[in-house]
Amino acid sequence: MSSLLRRASLALLLPALTGCAIGAYISPLSPLERQFNGTYEGIGVGPTGRVPYRLVLAVQPRGQGVSGVLTNLENRKAYALSGSFEQKGNTLTLDTSLFEQGNQHRGNLRGEVREGEFSGQLRTVLFGKELLSYRVTLGRVSSEGAAGRDTDSD
Image (cartoon, rainbow, N blue to C red; front, side, top):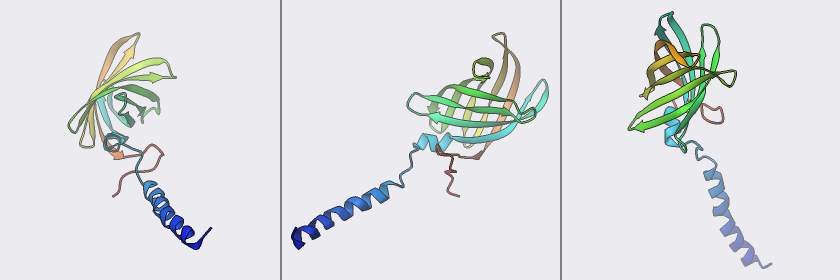
């Protein structure tokens, strides 16, 4: 191989390799996921008093679905959360169901996420009927990304 051909192939290869390195820093999360995914903590107020809650929320833009875990921090019970969302501007409206042990429907969580705060209603379910209602207000405490890394830049 001639010296000129080697230099030409090196000159063409260098931009391609540099592009790979730059591309490695592109976030796999969509703007919607970066805006709303994360951990929210706060209080639910209802018939049994004030109850601390933690919500770990993940938004899936493709199917307009949400999933996550709602944990009662008082009794340490955790509930799998799944449902749907609607986005209007900077507000995400959630309509989700809560399940214990995979398939036991235990509640419904509905509300809005806006400017780092979830505000809505948690309704417990027994025998298919909504019973107790809690007014829930949760603030965002972290924005965990899909790979478990904090995506906040502050």
